[in-house]
Length: 252
Image (cartoon, rainbow, N blue to C red; front, side, top):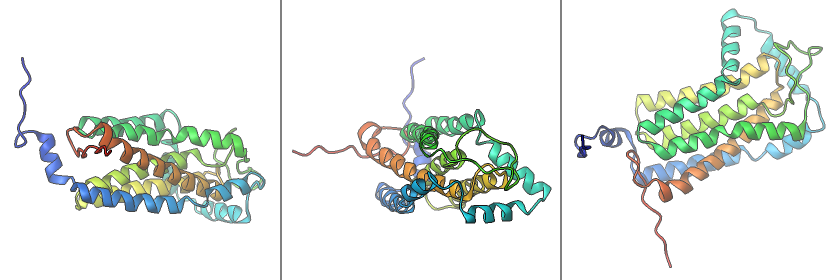
């Protein structure tokens, strides 16, 4: 049977675009503001990485870890375990792929592709760990849930979730019109990224400075991700079903 073209009044994806997607000028303004904030927050990463290369931990690391671990509620303990668990492979792979698939099939094709790029931050974390080679917290100093053999700086869990949750928050903020659902999504992505850092400290698998370094580097990767997103959309995905972009105009 031949495909039947849908009019704008009957195409559900066009209705989604008109109902919840912000206008193009608004999307561009929000994108620029979000990227400027992220770049500013990432400025201290290089300094922290250089220091972490020579200092196994700071006094504030020990103080914060012991303070966080001083609470032993069962519900909190299970929450911290579950949050950390989703950051390990293969759970992290599923967490990264499912949203990309959903974005693709709702018509946000370029957004789905760039979401995979955001998830590539896991590889960046691995490379930085090899360079900095900082030891993880010791069982002689704090409670360690499970000893891991890899380097501690930066936290791979936190870096990846900062980049991915940050990109999904970016899409939510720039694409969707103001609503309770939009606000709820922004809060959810922010809380997940924050809890991931807290869980890594609580389980004694990273120092506070490992986590902060991951937030900073994750923000930097997020800024690059947004840059790739804004560069590619008007060039390759101007006709996608939802939230299309005006093509780049070539000037002489």
